[in-house]
Image 1 (cartoon, rainbow, N blue to C red):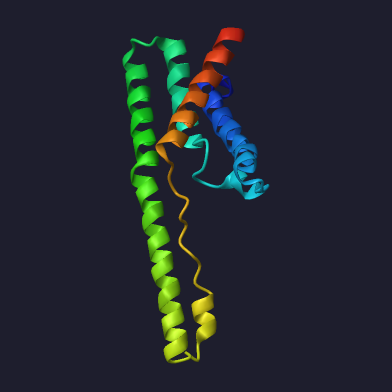
Image 2 (image 1 turned 120 degrees about the horizontal axis):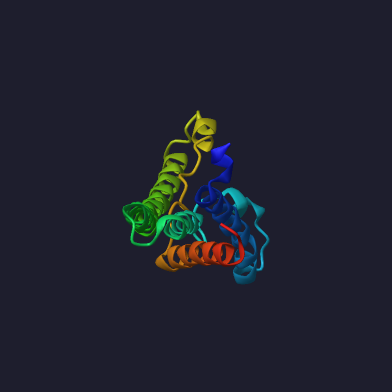
Length: 159
């Protein structure tokens, strides 16, 4: 089956797994807390999105040439994804943090003013996810890890 022999695809998948695995020890070094939920979370150091798209783009470059139109498409897609991760999604996370704060303040306000009879409904509201995007350093390190991973595989593999 040709899909199973698609090296850029598999390197992209492996880059995501590799970056997600790196999040746990990096976070432990910084916070001294072991947080296994980072294995499946968005955001954080390094960016698995950046690792994946740079890995795929680099692999495409190795496969068809860095001067090919296909590499240009892969590189542009990688740039767009990395920009989105460090700008749009990061800002969405910042907005979610502010909205969560406003919601908690409103809950306190209503609790103190009226003692709502349906307080349990208010407790069921989940916080919006604030860790959506990445800092520029997280995107850079994620992208660099994807490129390095692919260069190592193509340097020592027979592809």
